[in-house]
Length: 155
Image (tube, rainbow, N blue to C red):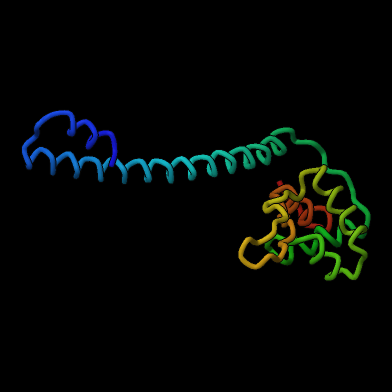
């Protein structure tokens, strides 16, 4: 038991008070678990806020976007058309290119904040299989694809 019950052992208490102390101890334990869970959620949310702040900073800089080569633009178009996070391997297979070439283009796009890593490479503790890092396009990437590649005007 916890400290509340330990405290009750020091002196004579009625059965009613002892039961109330036991109930209070149980409620305290539940509150501790809920607090731990909420702290985990807060930590995850804080990380997400940091990631989104980085994206916002890119837009606030209002840097002119440079022109990319045809292969890099194909990678951008693929992200745009898929509308979901992609791994380097998925892009390499989809565009029939060597994985190192795909990684080079990911590096270029990441440096310019057109794509961001949203999930790290990991090994599943259940299956032992590895999951690749995933990247997603940023709003800046969508704007680049619409304006520079597809030729639509954007504000």
